[in-house]
Length: 57
Image (cartoon, rainbow, N blue to C red; front, top):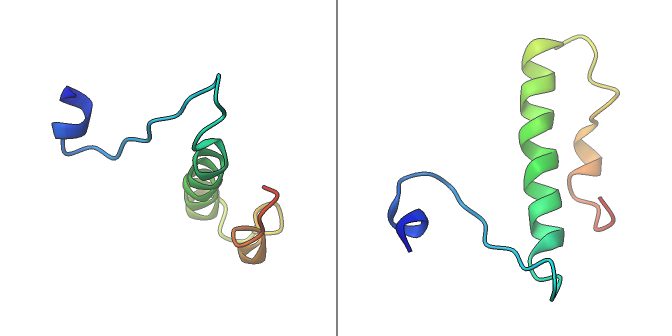
């Protein structure tokens, strides 16, 4: 597809079959954490590093 050919990162998910939802959640959490730590470097308790590795994000 055209999305796959673009240079941007993309994740293909299936809501009906629930495929790649865990991977999607993990990536969203990682990106939100990066933004939060950049904006609020002194306030990193909302997104601690050890939560990124947990399975139940």
